[in-house]
Length: 364
Image 1 (cartoon, helix red, strand yellow):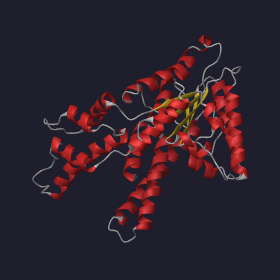
Image 2 (cartoon, rainbow, N blue to C red):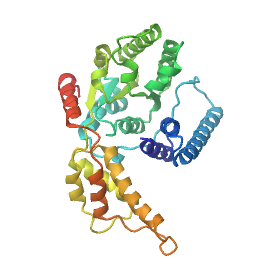
Image 3 (tube, helix red, strand yellow):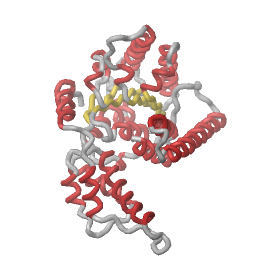
Image 4 (cartoon, one colour):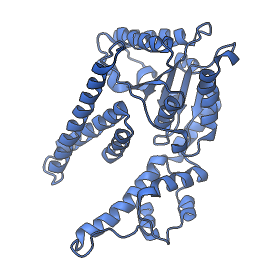
């Protein structure tokens, strides 16, 4: 998990998506610190601690960069100490397949932004992405922001809830007020809430603050869903557990889009993306890899390619580096070895739950 979040952090960092990068760096730091606490005598602990410091330093640099830009803005927006915004640089063609999801997004968000005059009855402003982890839900939300040139608010629900202790409902109100102001100034706004089930999931033992926060969120959602308001504020939620969402919130997400495991065509596209910067041997049969990775998520597939590259690097570093400066090409045997050791992260039982929920609540 630490490797997964670190990889995502670096990718977002390269793309200039500061908030997403910092969120993933923070997750990586949290996991590495837990490992250090659980295994203090491990020889890897010093390495983990060093990586933690590196990631913390990078987070500080990103924060400093964001603050500097705010100070240079000629017309600063209302400051929000809880939510960072950035302009993602992720395009449609960087997301493999997901044609049904992209079509639904265009109809719900892209077309109304381009031609609001063609929608006299209004348009959907609540979109829910659900499906197995590691299949592109966050990337889809970022790509929408790029497509319509929107202000992008990225919220990590669990951490936000902890920060909102005491004044949570007030901060929810301020967030939506800031978003509506940006929309009135002519900029579409996307409020993306990752792991939204942590924020609006079913609760059996809520305390008063949580109840007020959820009620305020419902109120704000109803406000932007008002058909009389021609506003371009969109709330996009992502969850791996749609069955944990409370019924009142499900109804407010007018588009509920299943983001499934990559099919054979999507896996083929992903392999082309993954191999762009890798040295691949001529014996690598992409079609055979496509067949052998049925049931793997997008992040699973990336892990396979990382694993194959790691095997080649290990061979170089454990050998005689003085006679060989470059790693050899990754062969088909390397991929077969990694696939033999790495099973899909999503079980058939879990997939059946997604299918059942989709049949009950589908809204494309």
